[in-house]
Image: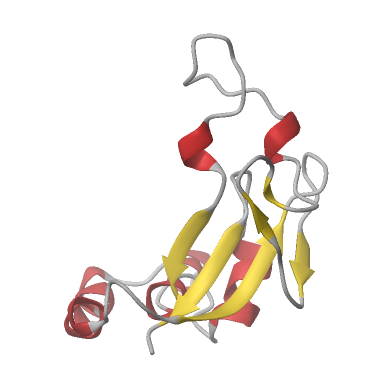
Length: 118
């Protein structure tokens, strides 16, 4: 097994997930993982999270980080959180399920809520 085969899925493997992803409801699901970024470079898996219109995920640093996508470099209001389908997350490197995958896989970016279709 090469490093590449350990880190990435083949196109055929990724395509095999498409029917499941296409069938997933788009307007409901269950949150199965919440990851916040309290300080730059730090990731924290939370048992639960509180969303706030002004600060995004409470305890995350989104509201204190500048954005290159706003004229005044203020935090972008449309980028408070990222939501990803748990099936999609499990299809990536590791593939052992959302909790096993996302914690090492998460890189700089906004908080992540991994949602499992209901």
